[in-house]
Amino acid sequence: MPNFPCLRGLELYQLFMERDIFASPVEPLFNHDNALEKDILQDWLINLAKKNARNINESHPQQGLFKQINAVETIMYAAEKLRIAQEAKYLAIELFDRFLYNHVHDLHDHVLKLPMKRQIKEWQKIQDSVSNQVLLRVVSCCQIASKLTSHYKAFLFQVVSINRAKRFLRDCGYRYASESLLQSELRVLKTLKFQVTEPTPIVYIETMLEILGCNNSKAEVKTYYFVATKLLDLLYLKYHAFYKILFEVTSSSRSQSTEQKKKFQKVKADQLLLAAAVIGAAAFMVQQDKADEMIEEMSRITRISQNDIIDFTSVLIQLVEEE
Image 1 (cartoon, rainbow, N blue to C red):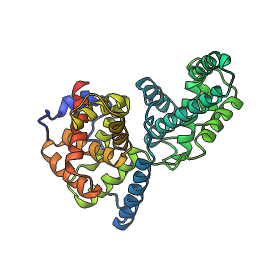
Image 2 (cartoon, helix red, strand yellow):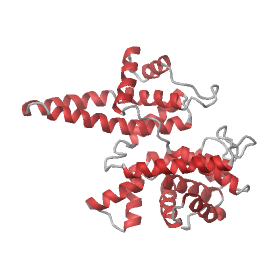
Image 3 (cartoon, rainbow, N blue to C red):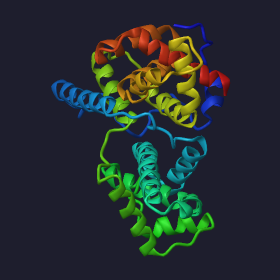
Image 4 (cartoon, rainbow, N blue to C red):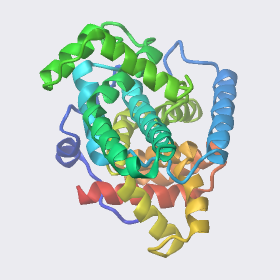
């Protein structure tokens, strides 16, 4: 592992500034008396790995294009105000990125079918309209995500109703009729062809931590989880900077050829690798002397090489150090 200083005590508290990381988070209940059987966990991980492999194969160069820092900050702010679950927050980010890419692509195809002299003017109108509707689309993604994660305890997190969505938008200076919110939610769903149930990185993280806890009863999985969510927040906020640094570290190059971009896109789409590395970074920050052991365990669980996990983990810790 790289020789980064281990953040402890006051330093770690100041980094996250929310609450003592050694307090057990409300969800999930790792290695609880009612925890899943090992065979079920294994089957669940295999299923996630298959989905991950499919997503890697279907990845495209523009994936993640709209995970810009201002968009991610807006979604995180909306998620907090709308009180949606942790998983719903990450799902909303993924939905927004996929929706906006497909939405803009569809609109661009529409403009190209117009007479040449109308294209520039029409495209400018569309750009303005898309910009003006960004917050509305963010709320729609939060609404959909909240419904898909409604298994969380009702007194903690709630499905985002039309009225709650309207109040949030009104507080932000926007007034929309209920019909407009319904139409926006339907637009997002149709644009994504109703394919909105893909697992997010937090699902991979939770599953792997549950397995880790079963394999190693001394692992601080609850603490790792809380730190991991903060690292995942940072990774989303620094998405493009992170993968730029990762490419430079792994390829020893600052520029990407077309072929390199294509290969590296598969790395960006690999959520199993991301989850393993986030857990490795969390372990490093909580118990530096246990980090190598935890990364080795992540490698055994995922069948991903330790070197790949370490490369990813090192860049993530570097981002923390720069904050």
